[in-house]
Length: 584
Image (tube, rainbow, N blue to C red):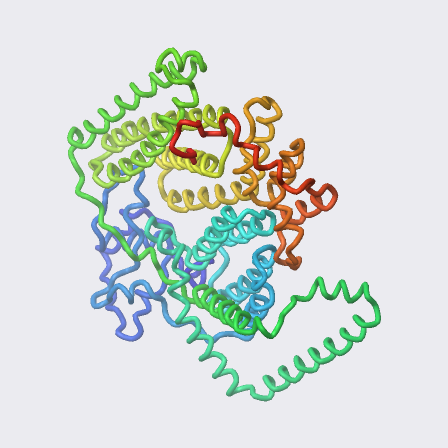
């Protein structure tokens, strides 16, 4: 959504330098004492750049990764504090369409969220998104490409709990969906804006409730007759549905079953919990609508650029670091590409021990390299085109070398998984390392094409990674890899003690195991899937598929054979003389 009320207020496109000259040639108007509209109203991109260039210390054109000519900031007039610069004017009176959408969100939250997570999160999110859309339109904001990207991405992430039974990818998806929804409402661009804007919805909870109460009071005073008619109509409709629905359900058992499956099972004992969910949905929808109508300009929080250093002082430590990376990578190419026998000949370790020895160090090296790049950009020389070329050459080389380190770390993980199998920790850190490689590629692209979209691009890549991680079903991948490894070499055994704690997403792969391994791996999952009465809106597709498989082919025996499985020989990642199981 656009932060400006109309396109007519957008100034013509101009460079930051031209905007600065124009400000020097024309006198600035005095700020109006009441209300501080120029400070509160969001300004277009070019105007933001001009304001940042004129009123904040500029980093100059020498930094190729710099966002524009400076960090985005609202125009700072004398006497304006941080709050006046960040907060917009009060939104218009809440509209009936917003109120009805908020009420619908609260009702479906109370009815559906009390039984677990599944497709019900999407059901709750739809009316909340409509409330935000109607509130934004009433405030004059328009849908913009980045707003649509955040909104669609957030709704797509809510498909993960509808598809997967595993709790850990569901948690990541729900948190990421909340962050994208908050960004869609605030429309942040800068580093701090994207970081704080992803949590900015919390700031609108109390103002949103006050805004909603005030709007209801004003509209109720002016239209008592309409509100009374609406309440009477709703009450009559509910009575008719209850009476005739009860009659039809008692007349036909099939209709009663259908009605029972569709309608939530709400008992009087759950009253306090349902009331809490109603209040939670009401407050959340009001906060979203208020943020859409009056978003806080988190981009107004700026951090001044560091003092530029001389070329030699800045570049020499980074060049030494590049040489160290190059030497390490040369050894990696010789050892890792030489095959398993080369690993043993060069290090005296087998390939799995060699991989376990270095993966975590390479992961930390990647993280620290990103920190080094951020600090180097802060103090990079900014004198002209030569400085820009120097920064691009030195940091670009460091990014490329770090990408090779990422590839080496992933290769080590592949060696370790081939020996000991896949676990949740191993697939999680491997996915993290892969995403860090994507971040490095984005930084390289920003050095060539400009860093205007870099903060938002990294946020999109993180959300896309979480979405892909959930849709690929990590528990299903873990089970599939371990089963394939067991089928290829049964002498290696299979860790039933670990696999039996996976979610229902692992049932299709674990169902291919021979007996008694199959029944031992699925016994706990079958107890959780078949003996729970979860309604349709709180049941994931993975759980429904597992239930279908286990109903056709249930587990066998009483579990006595399971005690000897995994206790003879070497478990995956465990040796008898070790102190304990290696979670890595």
